Amino acid sequence: MGEPAADLRSQFLAWQCLVRQRAMRVGDGRPTSGMCPHLSLADGGSYSGQVTLLIIRAEAAHDVSQFRHMVQKTHDPADRYKAAIKYLSATYYQKPQEFSDEMTGLFSAEGLLARALCARGSCILEFSQFGSRYRLPCSVRELEENT
Image (cartoon, rainbow, N blue to C red):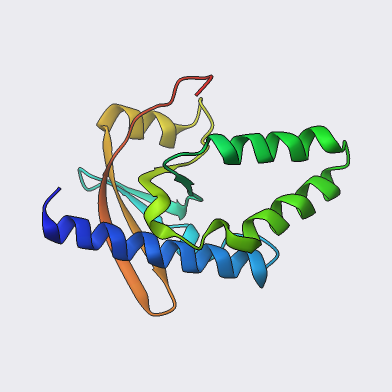
């Protein structure tokens, strides 16, 4: 990765961590506009809605075990949600350099958008919040079911 691309990656992930930590602490975890980019298909096609995407730490094994524990601890969805917000509000987003530059989203397997993204293999994501804007060309891949 060249220096300008590495700088953009670092700036974007730092901004994403700020946006997400604020959403956890102030917005009770509700996705904000900075977490829900406008999606354009790379060949000029457009999708009218926004998509919600997640960022994940490059080494996520510890996080997976924490979330698994939260789910197994109680059957009450409200308690699970509160525990997850508490975990994500604390120090989860404090170190942007620990995050992967891959984002993930959940789409209906039968939906037109998922099929179009997989067929094209790329898209453009436009993020905007707090006066900051990022327009990122992205490659797209479908995750295996057990990933």
